[in-house]
Structures are given as C-alpha cells and as structure tokens.
Figure: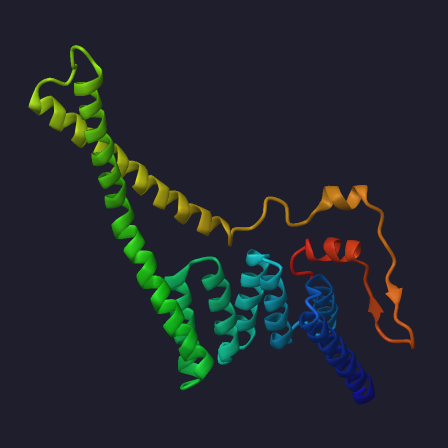
Length: 247
C-alpha cells in the first residue's frame, strides 16, 4: 500500500515538474495538461492549482485562472501564494481594489515579503490612476464640449448671413448643452470600460466546448521516448483545458 502511494506521489511530482518546465518554455497549453493530469491523481494538491492558475493567466484565460486561485485558497487558506495568485489575476483584469485586498491578505500570511510589498505599491499606484481617470475624464469630456460649443457659436455668427444663435443666452445654453453631452459621453465611456473589465473574469459562453469536440475526433496521446509520461498534441490540449477544471 505504501509502495503504491509512493509511486503515485512520484507520478504527481514528475507531472508537476514537466508542467513547470513547460511554463518556463512558454508552452502554457501543455503545462495546463500536465497539471490537470496530476490533479486527476491528487485532486487536493493546492500547489498544482496554484501553478495551473499561473499557466491560465499567461494564456489570458482569466476566469479559469481565478477559479484555480480560489481553489488554492479553499484547500489551503493559510498559504500566502493562493492570495497572491488571485491578486495577480485581479490586477491583470484591472480590478485594482480587489487585487489590493488580496495582496494585503497575502502579506498578512507572509509579512515583509518583498515581492508582495512591491505588488502592493504597484497596485496602489494603479488604483490612484484609475480613480483619477474616473474623476477627470468626465470633466475632460465637458471641456471638449465647451470648446466645440464655442466653435459652433462662432461659426454660426461668421458663416451665416442670419445667425440662428443671435441671443447671448441662447449662445450660452447651446455651449453648456454640448458640454453636458460631452460630460455624459465621457462618463458613459468610463462605465463601458468598467463593464469590459468585469467581463474579463466572467465565464465564457461555453466552457465545455461540446460542439467543437463532436466535430473534431479525439486524438491519442503521444508517449514520450524512454517510457516517460504521455505528452499531448496542441489540438488535444485545447480540447482538455476548455473543459475547465476536470478534477
């Protein structure tokens, strides 16, 4: 029994090392397959979820990366790297306040860690920039609206024989109206940006990829030379990681 358990642990470690090697070589799809294979053997291995989260992040599969980071935290809430992984996904998707909270949670578990402290400083700066943009961009839109309004009023006075904006109050109201439109458009733009950021960590429309799998035949694994663990083709990699967490 102990011999079987030891063999299983060796298999998991080998798969993990193969996944880590693929990440270093930027073969992220293949890395995900190795981690997923290892998790099928050891589904409670939180470090595998952490590593796979990083691989998904590099692939810009943000929803899956966040899922694995959350699973890492669930399996080992006392491990700082789980919160760090979650924060990295949140930072990459421009959720800076959420990222800051996750980084701080990681720092509570691993105080004085320079990489966490640097990440907090970087995220704090991005939070400030983002808030500044929320405050300034609508007024920038209003300023552009005022300039356009003034141009329209002047053009009406110069280019027409009988100006339609002859009364000073009408000129002011026209200019202010265009400024308000500019303000509203700028606020709408910021709202659109926030919605786009939110969509980055929402689940895709179809995580299972059933229709694609029905159209494409299953490909066999290609055994490595020397009797090592099986490797997968890129097509099979795409099919497997689209299923999300298989473990």
